[in-house]
Every structure is written in structure tokens, then in C-alpha cells.
Image 1 (cartoon, rainbow, N blue to C red):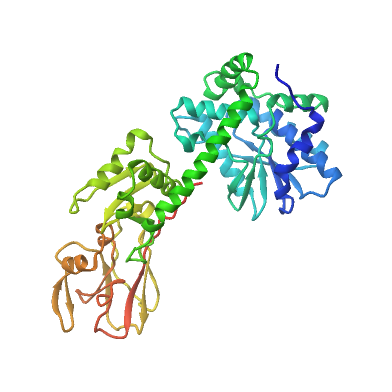
Image 2: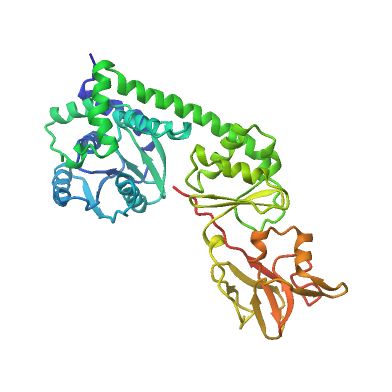
Length: 444
């Protein structure tokens, strides 16, 4: 038979999770009005009457996905008024996509993130049973270790942090606390809809498992914790493996993430994938196991090839012995740039960063162009040189060549941005400097 701790113990059981955050400027609670968040808000409000805590606020995100939800903000306001807690209601638009659950979650966390000021904490009410459901759900989707690892107790969110203080508490204990304190909460009718996978697991699968193994939820949550520890070890190994690969970029003005290929190729296939997953995880949604062939094709291509590995949120290109992550502006077609009317002022290049002159500004009428092929550059003392050969000599990757700003004076190619000796060599005490676009769109 399952044993539950007394609901009176709940504040004490939350204390270790709350302790590191007691100096935060504010605590916010993601308050749906359901059982779990109602208990969390009640415990915190009760604790605040007896101890010195940061100011506590509640945030209700209104998704507008069902008619019943229109009454929920009023219920939440009534609960918050009774507890003396300020409530903020945020309405969001849920984007249409394959998983309505995921779309609603994305919209909710975007709202939470935007609401947090520097150093503030958002608390959500996921509990032990949620941890178990998440593990089952991801197991059935064939997730890898990173996906199976436990929901962390805390992580960064916007300018602040997300905290889940109830992860060690069962749903049954939350229910017992709510009934002892005669709390009222919203029953979301969509929670009973078996078309949603998590509802099916919660209402059909876990009760069946628990009838045979009473500690099923607790044991699954503990397993998720073990998997999380294993993932942390793999992250440490990835950092070691990426150390040498991060060095050696001879073009520091190309501000996109890149890795040297040789140190990666020297690793086993499993360690290559582990290192790349770790490196790519802030940049893109990761490929499933069936799509790693793209990495092998990129890695094993001939040196004169132009391999590209297309991922969900960008592309990996291989050039000059490195792999380069391209996203955002780098994947958009360039817009034509023509005259540069005042060289004293920086020139914003549409979708391609900014151009400026360092030093004494030369006189004349200038325009900026991009490579079309066949360009010739006159270098004082060296004669006329083919631009393609010069770019080969400088080791400029193909994905940069078409974006490299070229400065023309009276129809003559005068300078190539950022390249020593080509960026105004022998033409005066000035240099053509290009601040290339970045694609640091790090995903949350």
C-alpha cells in the first residue's frame, strides 16, 4: 500500500528547494488555478506570514483554447485576494502546430519569461507524478538520454530562474493538503481528454501501474534523476572533447559558432554525437537518431566538396577544416547595396551587418557591392589580382565570400572588407571594416 507523508509536512519538505532563492527580488508563481498550483501558492502565502520571504506574486496565463477557461481568471483573482497575493493575468495566442500541448506550453513559458525581471524566480507546480509521466511519455517516443533526464529543480528563464519546488511531492500528498485546508481549485475539462497523450498516461497507464507497483511514480521519478546524473557526466565529457575543437578560428570577425573538424574526427562515433549534441543544443532542436547520417556525410565528404547538414533551426557547413553553424541572416538572400553617400557614417547593410571606415576617410564617390564572379583588384606594387584567387589564399569560407562587402570607387574595385592588405592597401591611412552579422539566436 502506498504511504504518504502528512500534509502538515509540506512546508518543511519545500524548505530545501526554496532555501537558495530566499534573497531573490521577487517570487512569482505560475498559477493556473488547478490543484497543484493552488497548493503551491497557499503554502508560500502561509509561509510568508510566518517568515521573511521575497514578495510573492501570481501569474495566470490565459490561453483562450476553451470556453470554460474564460471564467478561470476571476477564480484565480478570488483565490489571490483571499491570500493577499497580487495577480497578473496574461493573455497569449497559441500558434497552430502538430502538438497543441506543446504550442500552449511554448506560449505559456514565453509569457513567464517576459514577465521576469533580473534575478526574479518563477515557481511552477510540477510534482513527482509529472516527473514520472514525462519519463514514460519520452520513453514511448524513443527519446535519448538527454530527453529522458529528469526535469531539473531549477534552470535559467529569461532574466531570472525557473524553480520547481514540488518535484519531490506526490499528487496524492498535494490532494491531501488541499482537502485538509479546504482549498478550492479549477478542474480543467481538457485534463480528462484521452486524445492528449499525457492525459492518457495520467488517467489510464499510471493508475494501472500503481495498482501493481504502488511506488511506481516515485520509482520512475527516481530513475529520471539517475538518468539526469548520467547526462551531466556526458555533458562534462562533451566539454572536454570540445575543448580543442573550439580553438583555431583564424577569422575571429566571422562571429558564428564553429568547431575544428580534426579533433572531432579523432573521437569514437558515439563521442562525436555526444559532443555535437552538447554544442548544438543551445542553437537548434536536435535531430533524432535517424537523421545523424547528415553529420556523417558532412564529416566524410571530400575536401573539395561543399557538404551541408540541414537541421531544424539552421545549417552546418564545412569549410577550411572547420564546421560552421549558420542561421538567421546567413540563410537569407542578400539585398543589393549601392551607394555609400557619407563614408564618415557607418553603413548598415540589409541583413549583413555594418560597414565603416577606420582612419582618414578617402575622397570620391563610393558604392558597395557583393561578389558576382570575375572581380579584379589592383594592388599597388603587386599589379592586378584575381579576387577569387586572393580569397583562396586567405582561406575565406565559401559561405562568407558572397557576403564580403566590396568597396568600389568610380566603378573600380578598391577594397575588400576585413582582409589585411586588401582592405585599402596602399590607398591611404584607412581600412574598410565590416562587422559581420551574428546568428547567436540561442534557443531557450
